[in-house]
Length: 415
Figure 1 (cartoon, rainbow, N blue to C red):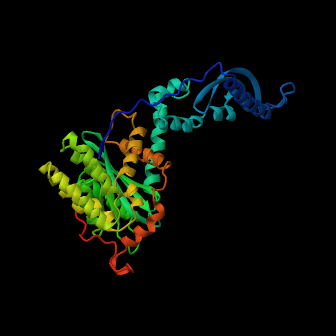
Figure 2: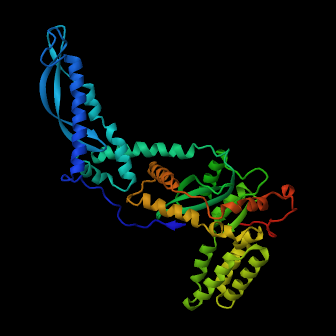
Figure 3: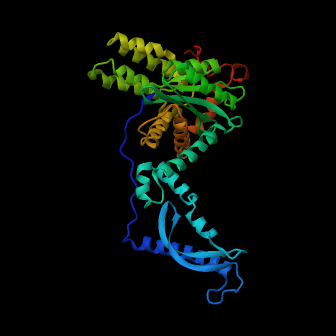
């Protein structure tokens, strides 16, 4: 679990360069098209300008300065005015449908959402849009767009997706606000953002609520398969996963454990410790994995008793993949939680402009859903995905494994 940190200020969009000839040409073309549309509507209502119909219901009434909106910008134009004649002889101003369409705030909604998603704040959007969108209007557009993202994420049916793996991690937004995120790994090596759950901390209740919703939506290991969960060692994560799927194989993140042990060791021991950890990461198979873990344990035991307790706490969950006898080409993606850590890093980038979280509203859920869906668009398949069939064979339940138990860890998964 990572704490929320301030990132570099997002790039703010500025006003269009008034001296750029291309921009001036484009703005002129848009204005000409808007004015032509207005003229055509007036001609349809009032007839030709020099030959008005004597008994026409509408008549031209001059023009005045007007505004229209396009792509989040406010532009000026000269709009025609039309008066409508009533049966009793009175006249009233007629609002042109084309002018109303040009002024429709919906013309700016997509541009506002895009700008805010790219890093602009609602405070600066009014300035950047030349006054076309106020701070409150930008906020309303954003709230509406992000509220829809919650349903878009949580209404996806997971039943038809062949998942073999699950990653869980949490990000701390404030002292009393954490978001736990779940990401699934498919048979083809694709990564899928599954869901999230906000809470006061990364506790068992929060994680259980998240997993219960995943189960209700159809998330489960493939038929006849165990689940592989890659976790950072947080007890609530392991407890909740094993409660839902008791036969899960848990792979503890070796990167987290290495960093944790370096906190106990002297700096002069870090280089040798790193060498031994690297040996563990590249070792293939149960025998090599056990030997690498034993050598690492011997090194730690000779230097720090507290570090040894920490290492033994993880025990063989650090070499679950080795015990499954899978190719070491999968270690880069499945021995650590780096894949979901990258999601969290990009999530923090998407939400960096939020300076005050409001747990009492749906703000956290709205921002989180929008950010995670945006992050998901940049996903790539996990490294070594071509070797996944061998992992799936090792994850098969014993009664369905044709090799008779090959690949099952010699010790049962534990929290």
